[in-house]
Image 1: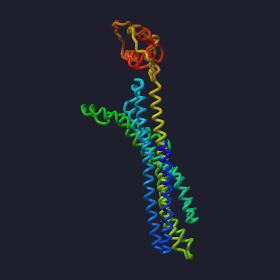
Image 2: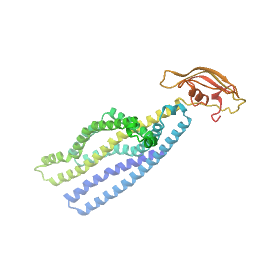
Image 3: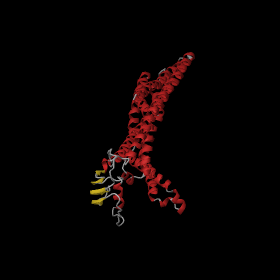
Image 4: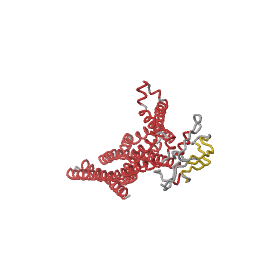
Length: 394
């Protein structure tokens, strides 16, 4: 945690230092254009340079702290994923593609790293920077400060709209997860493609996932397009409608140079506001992705634990008799019982033949003997003792 707190503090310092040069820029413009004091202007230029270098170094250090934390987090998530996989029942692997499991753990652990490493400094910058921007702008000129507030409100509205319809984002993420999972299975089946000279159309599920992903990406892009264009026009085109207005209100006065200085300052200033809101926009996207990543990992870990088997510690065997008592087994999402109230006993040394039609439950019965599947109900005994009381290694 100390890495996070240190990273936040350094990001706050970096945010303050990133805005401070604008105040000295205004001083520089006054000295250079209005007062013609080039020596003083050179001094302010040097101060700006020093502050920008210092800000870059502090931001780099803040990002280093959050990246270090993020790598530890990603490593722990992967370790936790392996731990859950080792304890998961074989039934879990029967109903989940290995490609899906791998992608959820790998991709979401990686996404969590990326989000944490960059999200924490960006959150700090997104919160501190606008406040400092307003303070400086109102200090320079109250009218430009009011104009900045209006632009900020409009930008905030269109930033929210830029996120697009949330249902498209959810659909996009699900289609991306599906195409990633199917691509793993496709690569594993590459030998079949070569032998039988098949095409991608032979892998209908993979083909359908690609089509679904392309449609989802296109729909989400369309939902964000118009607000994003308007957002850019409002901020990047601010000078086009602020400059004529400023010229109009200053007409007939003797401070044309001062107005020009303020307009130059405002134009530079708006670029920073644009960058700040772009950072906020990506911040919202990353926050959504972070929530999705955590939910996917927790859901996967929950699925692993749901049908997990808890073993005992007994390692002693007197003999190897096997007994089934009222054993039943039903696969998930199935109404039909694979095993229904099975009762029998096999003594050590007996040879037993299990026969039946395909789907009658032969494989399921043997998987229950080895605890590859946990019976839905009933009990299995080894050596007169419940199988769950024996050690896992047995």
